[in-house]
Image (cartoon, rainbow, N blue to C red; front, side):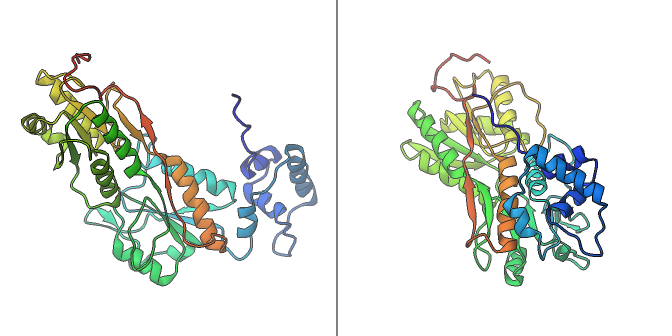
Length: 348
């Protein structure tokens, strides 16, 4: 099946006309007032490219053109903004940038916020939140007190990831972790696993809660479904614990911990997935070298970023039509690390 042609954007128009994207935006919005001067030949060149490409402005961009700065803020609670393509948050920013460009908005990264106890804070002595029309919030854990203040102040924002109420409902675009983990746990039970263990990180984040709830729902038909906390550094002890419990499959919240568990199992002479199956519950949050395709799921991070901007622009211009809370499906990965318990088919 041939993929649909890529949509022409304002950036494309600017490149072909040899002008800035801001100039294209001014021409599209028919700005002719005294403080905006565009040479007639420049305007004509832009209009000619628009006609030749069949470009059509996004309706959201039209709505945002009046009464707003057309600046979207991006704030992350992590101590540093993503700087490389292998950073967990990088795909979110790719999606955010793509949709912001589509609707003709600039991005403002709030990087001056101080880091306190390993996390940034939105509200501080020199916070510049109001420079933007609204803000997208990124982070595994988002401060509930700051969400409460944003709700109270009526400042437009959208969280990336499901968030609990904070003095009122929180607009968000998240991943449906509960459904993805539910299906994986059901699959393990169907394969004959009777004792399942959830290996968590010990956090109280909503994403962790959703994973755990999906695990317990999907493992309802098993004899045992328990939870433990572990890290990559405790992999050897964790494998010993799994064996002592009789668990034949581990559902591992942190990808690096899953890699360490698989390696530890092999060092101990166990087969994966014959003696111990290992299921990962998301993408790596840090680069982890491995040549193994783990059974698990992928998080729709770029799409979450795109839709976060879509929701935010609707909140800003009043077209959202009520509270927006979206959960996007995760893509299951049929890897090499979940199999029939006791099978020696895989001799890693």
